Image 1 (cartoon, one colour):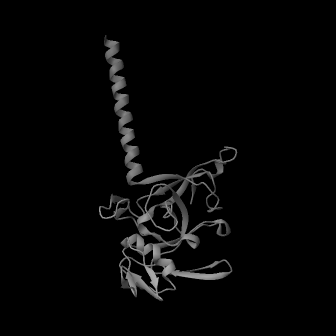
Image 2 (image 1 turned 45 degrees about the vertical axis):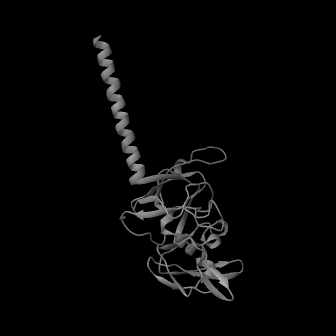
Length: 242
């Protein structure tokens, strides 16, 4: 009987220890860091397909996501105070804005992207696309930006994301909810994300600027890596700083 009691105590302590470790793991994943796998070579040579990375939730600040009662299927995002704002050069993990629809920006958990932030709010970013040069201004939270029929293509889906209403061009004028639009005051910060593999990356050059609401964290280092085709472990990429 004594042996059974001793065994029972050992099992109880093991279960308690396992539960405590599980709570620590959940707390770390919810409040501090997250792990993501890189599926493509759009960020090479910095990151390659098969890399597993650790991203900090604390640098931009942990998100608190709640359902928006006024818009079914949409969410309201609040962000706890972070260590610092997103900076140019950061490798950022974010929700891909168009996982459900190519026309409507929506926060979902269907797909995450990892790209480098190349422009932050308050900056103009220029790039070369399809034999022409293009540019966009990155709005800051609370900033009023002039809207016209030329730059509407950069901001149309952002405005619809924030207001639930599409701006339209009618008789050469930009209309929003039956009101002529000359400017718009943005509710959040916007960023330009681009892959390091410039010629083989599907990024903001194709689908536009990213609201801060969609940003999950900032990449820190790779903790594991294996070749997708062969499964061979890339030991030299272990714990490589991003």
